[in-house]
Length: 381
Image (cartoon, rainbow, N blue to C red):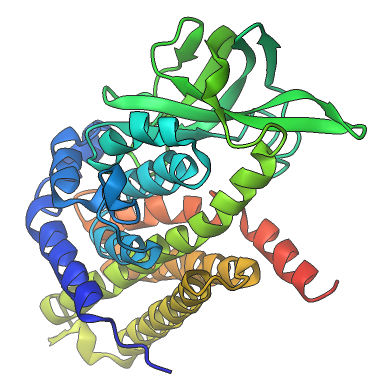
């Protein structure tokens, strides 16, 4: 079993690490404080090909694999999670549904701009009052001639209201089948009449990313905007979430490792009682535990990604990776803040942002409780 990165993956990781340190780190704090979306950084990531990493070359992508995206997310999140989640949502939730389930016409129409990072896509699943019960969809779509008429709302949708958002793919009830809701996926272009995007949420973390509530009031889109097979929308999105959990795990590992990076630097610089604080065993042990968490979580997402790339079942492994990694991120953010003391409570220091950003990782793309439920099911419970 070889855990060494291939030459291509290692080169990509190093390239993104360099970009994160030189381009993102010096400016992202100001964007975060202002709650401003970093359009120029997104443009640069697009020019690097990051938004097209797992997209086929024939559709304007890089023709790489999903693990390449995960490596990029880890390196970005070592510096900032707002930038990382913008990439994750733009690719995993925005472009991949089109790539996985779209018709040739849909791929040709939307993927090139999404893969180039010139436009962003979003994924409209969660609804007010729904939360973890994603199957409790209330948004409806009725076929009227050659158009779908959509009514309802979605909440907590990333990348849905930027100036470069092109499409939002939404799940909606399109009828009933065998006494159950028939849920389908439909692509809604930004600016469609009746499609309203709320003001940005005031969030605890991810302050430089875009997250909004969406409203659909008799929104009409062409019938050919149906994504994949009618009635398969919920199943399609569940498979997208399985992949996305590996991506979120990678992002979580990045945050956890970023906490180690910052704490190591601070332990050498900060002096107390005549010595650098890294001289004291209490700090040494805390940082050692942080490194153990990051290392273990990285192995978990590597293992899940390996099974996915081999075409093997990976739902359980993805749930394990997401659970372990989000826990590591939260624990490391707390410990890093403690190591920094009062300075850790200041937003001018990265660990302050890390602390604010970590909690959502235990909630988004399936809460920790949902991950435990999935793991238990795979154990036959």
